[in-house]
Length: 387
Image 1 (cartoon, rainbow, N blue to C red):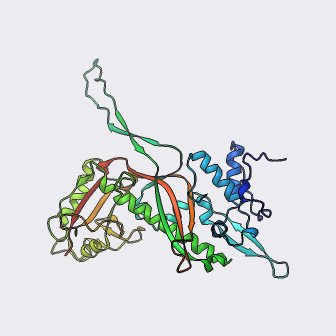
Image 2 (tube, one colour):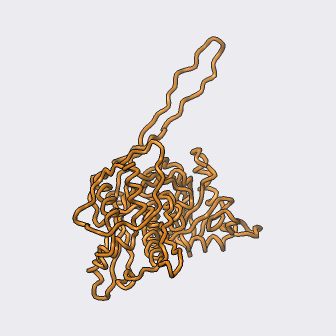
Image 3 (tube, rainbow, N blue to C red):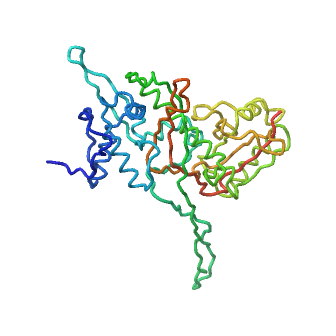
């Protein structure tokens, strides 16, 4: 049976040799021809080939057709042209495995991970994801997330009476795509290599910079062109820290304030700077205590434990707050109420000019994303200047 091909091959990229053999994705029940064809294109894209083509390396031997067609369709769906080439998240996760024998010439078989695995790979780089932030992918247009702002009330009634009518109240949290660009630098000679490990190296570098940019925006994004991060969200709770190290009462104050707003959940965690962790590891809750406030992680997948809650450390947490610009932030809260939205695909652009004197090239990965705090009262923030 001949499969209908909904998109034409972009003429300015051809002609090219036939695409390399790749496993054909299985069709999802009820999936339209357009989406199935897009997934099939995604399974044939190699990041290094796209970068080599943009750099003008071995263009005659590279089949850029699937990447060009995929990018064209994503641009059509999103209404935004690519700066370079739109690539599926799965393309950053593909790993080629060389099989066969030397006498047979060998074969390259690509094992493609699911696009959803992109978030799992980002997680070690973005501490907010480790702490429990939720991710929404495949978004189109602006997004409005319903939020309950008021609950119904219960009434005691006498026999034969009716309870007073009460209603819940709702509003919406808005998310709008904002573009972040994160870059890494590679040499032209590196692009000339064909080793599978080079593909992994370039992909991991790009994933790392995207993850760090996402983490920084979720923590301290300033709004406007950036997302508004936790620290910039109106209505978050605050905890005063009077000295050069938090007291035990002040630490418990974070938890008490969040719990008072019914936001004390198993997903609550602390997030702070490396220097604050060092301070808390040297601070005892009281004179009779043997263990400091910050203790070992105990296998909970975090960087440590604070009063039974997970503790995480990130250099993206600001350390330049306050009038003296030397105060570090401590964030405590229910990170499941932190939502990160991803629109479309990764937009990959190779810049061969900025570093031309050294022979290096700059690879920039653009990603449309936004961050929202679903309930401001789910987070409590304090700041102090460590000694």
